Amino acid sequence: MDKMDLQVKAALVAEAARRQKEENPELRKYRIEMPVNAIMQWLDGRKVDLSVTLGTGLGDFGKELPGMIETSYQSLHLPVGTMSAHASLLRYAQIGQLGVLLFSGRKHLYEKGVELDTALMAVRSAFFVGAKIQILTCAAGSVNVGYHPGNLVFVKDHINHLGVDPTLPFVAMTNVYDKKLLENAHRVAEKTLRDWVRKGVLASKRGPSFETPAEIIALRRLGADLAGMSIVHEAMALKELGARVLAISLITNYGAGIKDDDEITHEANTAEGAKAAERFSKVLLAIIEQL
Image (tube, rainbow, N blue to C red):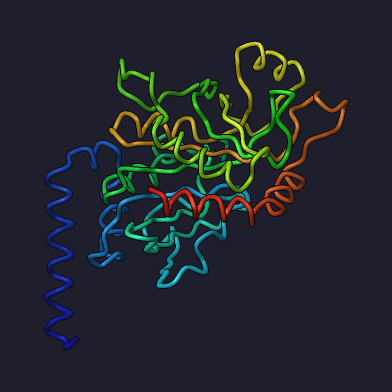
């Protein structure tokens, strides 16, 4: 491609970004003009159908896919996480017929000084560059005594204990998690993992502390099966935008009090995530290939 062709292509990408900004006043409302435009320019015309937010245990997913490209969140004006297990890298790859964005890591609400819109910048930006289907993943602790470390749980509903709500008034939350996506993905996972697969209700708190034994008991009585510190606000924001959401959580620890007085640590959770990474990655790839 000669210099003139490159200049024309750059001009077309810039014009597409300008139109995106003008035609979507929501970009300004959500303060995502800069990351949306930066992602579009980085993609250089590549199509986006799906995005995946990679939580604990999945940070390396997609690195070996043919044709994968990668860049830092910082280069795209996306917030950089402070947790060591979250790389803050965006990858793009073609999986089957789908163009897929892979967000390795997220900015958590429990990180010091993080505003709600900042924590939602990545998933909202992904939606506006084409990802109308989004897969959200995270690590969580068990609340249901029948759920164990290593289980993959497909989230069917949630309990919002974050203390924040990203939506405008009166957005319906009856079907936040797409039933068709959930059933198809669960079926794919069962073929590989069998008894390791669950469905459940996710309770989410802001953190950064883990739950107390009394809180685990209370959450169980409320109907929760697992507890974490992410996904829920992201899923709610995406529901408001009209995205289809699939959420999958890896159980990395028993909730406080379930196994006597064992202390929960972030290091142990990260190690459990690493142990499950290979099988979680295989299942995730199979799910995407079936979409």
